Amino acid sequence: MSTINSTYADFDTAALAFNRKSAPADRPVQNLEEARKTAEDFEAFFMTKMMESMFEGISTEGMFGGGHAEKIYRSMLLDEYGKVMAKTGTIGVSDSIMTSIIQMQEAQSSPAL
Image (cartoon, rainbow, N blue to C red; front, side):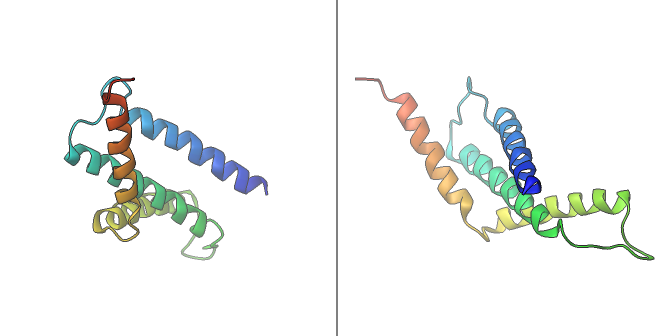
């Protein structure tokens, strides 16, 4: 159970860092292309984290497997898989994220009554 909690903590920390890096609060996303890119980046990040938890239990010990280098390589490989999945729209999370980004911007830009 502690590995699940630590995975969620890692995900939350990485999501906060991603949020700060891609869309600072003082500069909201101004156009649809930028919103699409931000949504696609988030979907890639999300898919990478999901695949990391899927591959976590796979043992590769043996003559040609395991070790620190394999962990690094697997991390980079899963990151690229996540980017490809997001770019091809395999899951479709980016569409929902983009809609949410646009709705939040519209709410922020409309004057308060």
